[in-house]
Image (cartoon, rainbow, N blue to C red; front, side, top):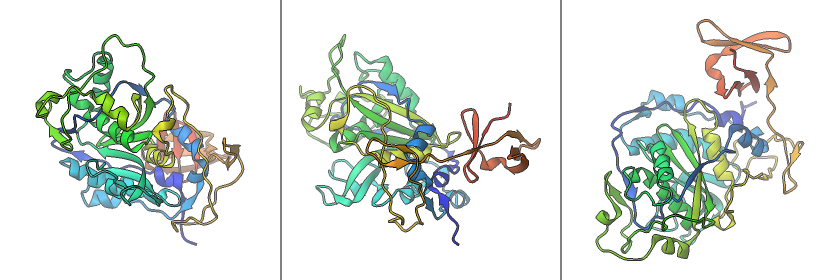
Length: 390
């Protein structure tokens, strides 16, 4: 019988370890992008919520596919520029996640889901059963790779200039990647977006503006005819990269073409130390939601109903998800993956093995096979959970 593993095991394997050089970079900019109004932490984007939300999907059995060791041996993880990072992420993260998505869903190069020639995201998740106006696949989620991006600086810049706007703030160019992916979501009507950098995944969820009372006018941008995306060096202002001045507000232009976003909720998942980086892509790809349905207030991460046949449409293996468990709002049943609780666990003196007691018997597994999450250790191959030893 062919070897299989659960989708949960597949998505929680060790990520690629990057060796990074020469991080100085500039970010794409367009005067047609709306400023980021506000940012808040996406508090319910957690490992446990993701596991509960897609329990039946994550229990499905697929054939193993793990390119990380081969890519590290080939030197793909040594990064000097954004193109190199994009290649590494595509091979070791995007492809494995797309491989695990059910049915006709996929995530791939943004060209497969492109609708507008002026806007081509690095990646797009879509549905191969649906077509867009450009006769390509219907996009559900869009995001970019940004090498050397400091999301901490971007978040701080927005927060520290929430009333008067950050256009003349020192860190304004750090916010451009968030503006760009927000723009994708506005025009293509997707509630979720993301930015990947060499340190991790920044998953984002958009909420509509509810027009709060402001102590200063909403920031405006002077714009000219579209000139596609432009590369700007740090320190450039909007007026320095436009050839003439117009009084039209970017907010008015955006409202003509889509929603007015008031808040970007974000969750940062480092490639090291947390097991839900690829789960984050799985979540975003499975949860398409048009911007027209976004609420102006925060709401818990919604339940999602997935219906599986007995055979995986992509031919990766037989689906064995149970139909017992909690019930979603749509009436479909789901079963959370069950971890067995280890009675005792201890790390060997050389740090190479964890010895644990289960059902009254002692056993040992290499420490590299256990994943830390908060105060707990998880072994996804054996579906074991233990509290970290003191």
